[in-house]
Length: 120
Image (cartoon, rainbow, N blue to C red):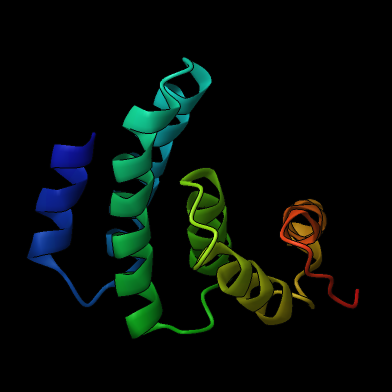
């Protein structure tokens, strides 16, 4: 899935709907590793997902899904330096997106683990 998504993104690198699929493919791979107890092995895969979400955000900075998945990937990659700001960016950027209410609540909980709180 990753290879197919990368090939598609190379054909249209300015299309956020295509580029995000690469991030999703890496994200799903990282979830599989993480859930199998291979936390250390999942970290570079989470980081690969983040790089593609960053590409999407460079095209469309307000892309709620990319903001959220980037934040969650950094959290699960145990990146205590970058995860709090990414979680806050998702919370702020998607605050009015009612479809993402459960994900926003999860992000608030994750952010609290870093000793940071946010307003609802």
